[in-house]
Length: 245
Image 1 (cartoon, one colour):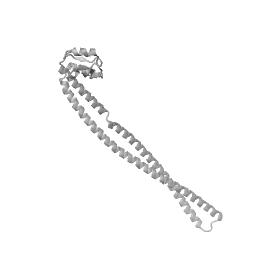
Image 2: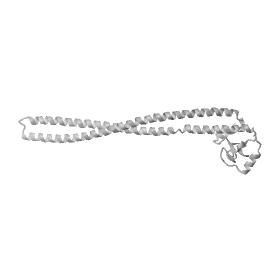
Image 3: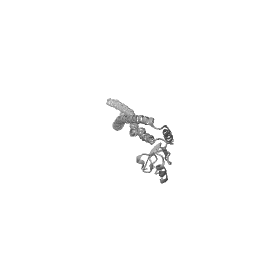
Image 4: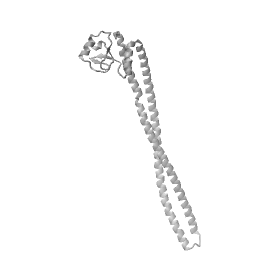
């Protein structure tokens, strides 16, 4: 295949633009903000779980508080009733002793229950603080997530614009490229292989393989418009003044 040397060199421009496009698309698909967002979502989920657990614990403590408070109030009412009975004259000695014994028992039980209530109040305070901490963490992390999302969106928009510019540039370059070389180039690309590369310093610019002396000798004697291919990767091998032939 023969194509004017100057037109062959257009394929280097196509390859350069495609390489830049590949880099931009890779960056677009692997924005660091995406990982940051994933990490933040995980941390938010953990903080929310902490808040839910603290809320459940707070509800359990509230129920226990109500139970103890009701029990203590009941004992106080019973004590007041028994004291009223004690104040009544004419009570038999045995009944008086039993009543005094009951009052002493009620006082002991109430003291124990009141101690439990104090412990419970301390637990409520700690649980309330934990719930507030977890909820504050969720709120702060959600703000961070919103900020990172904005950065991600801005970075994505910027890269999308750069990709669009390069795609437009590629379209313009391809319009002047030889159709037969584009066919070869696109076939290479469709198989995941480089389409074209500059011959420089005895190496194929597409696959970076060093060419042997025999191959270089054949290239040196080939006509300027002869279309050459790299024997290693199959890419179009483009010669310029940098090829050193």
